[in-house]
Every structure is written in C-alpha cells, then in structure tokens.
Length: 199
Image: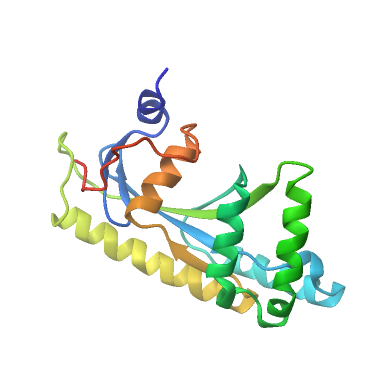
C-alpha cells in the first residue's frame, strides 16, 4: 500500500499548515522536537533532582501530551555537518570535546550503522465544528486552535526549561518530513514535494 494511503488511514490529515495540522474534522496537532540533556553523564544526585523535577512537570499538566521517541539511521555526513552547524546549542562544557567526538563518530561509523534517537512532543487540541468540509486558515476555529496550542507550548517550555530541556516547534517542511517519516515514508521526501498550504 502506498505511503500516502497508509498516512490517510492511520493519521487522517485534512490539512497541513505552517505550524500545525488538522486531523480528522476538528482536531489540531502541533509537533515539537526536544533538545535532550545528557542524563547518563550527570551525578547520581543531579539525576535524582532531574527525575523529581520531571515528575512534578508531568503531574502539573492539565492537558494530554504524547511523547514519541524515534530511532533513525544516521547519514553520517549530514549528522556531523548538523553538529558543527549547531555547535552553540551544545552545553558549553562539552564544546571543547566536539572535535574528538566527531573523529570518534567517524571511526565508529566505519564499523557499524549509527542510530540517532529523536524525542518529540505532540500536542493536540479538539475543537467543536459540525461541518464536513476541511477548515481553512484564518477561520475562527483555526485561530482558536493556534492560540491554544501556543499557550500549551509555552507551558511545556516553561516546565522543561529548569531541566535544561528546550523544545522547538516543527514548521512547514520539518512538520511534513516528520509526518512522512513517522508513518513509514522514510527520511527522504519524494521529489517535487510542495510546501504550499494543503487543504
């Protein structure tokens, strides 16, 4: 079965917007990628503190949150280029070791496949609309959904910031790439894919 057909059965996307998508008739979903922390390198005391803070964060939520962990095979040149490009995002005390790490990754990749784990947060908001046709951006329910998802994003961001975890909303091409890869389409998008608003 083609990927598009699988996508439509498992995740009935009616429209994809700049930062969210309409699923079914009136459920809006935004996807955020997290920048994780190096939990395994922390002291036992620091790990215990992080676990308590994360538990408090989860218990304080008043809306549903989906957490997705995805493992992707790493295309080594893309991965190392991305590391260099985002060097300023790496924790400051780890930056001096970046060159050694890159050489270690190159040597390891020559012996075996590398897998990168990526962490995503999916936030959804259910509207109330009885129409059967898809909504379009600029309509009242779209505006309401975008405001509510933004409010929830701010709450998630504020709750994770003390743990050192940052989130980034997937927009346009990244959102479509996430949906395509998550539903079996692979990491490379088909040629000729359009990022124009779909409805």
